[in-house]
Length: 165
Image (cartoon, rainbow, N blue to C red; front, side, top):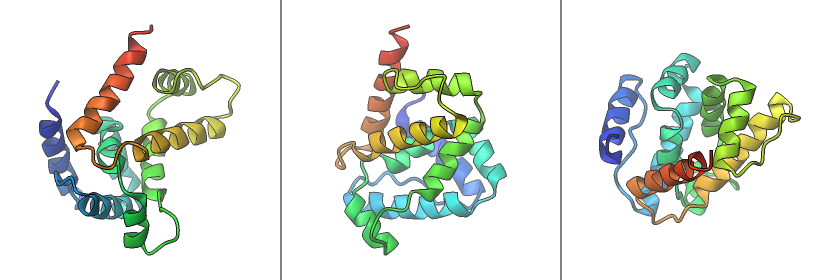
């Protein structure tokens, strides 16, 4: 597997082809919040086809990088809002989920979030729950975490559930 820095550089190269903000390697709270805000705005406004290609190539990686450990207060101040705007990230997560069948999404959700998904969920309930748990997990990671550390923790989470199979 490529190092997290190589993945970030490759992803940023592709993002630049779509006139998207690159994912910064700066780890201070303000730069992370600024990067999140710019990336969220781009995710909300770019063509769906751009999101599809990005999702096919990088899956959840852009979300892991841009959402991990952000300082919610800094983001809401930069967005000039009373609560954080996640709509671009939600749009992207929905695009990622479009790549999978309902059963595959349930399987992925159960592996990531300790069997919290059942086949009785409607597709809307399944998507809502997956997106809610994913954003909650990433936002609640320590906001002093580096991007490579965030990716490493996310990879460990996936591997721990894969080892349970």
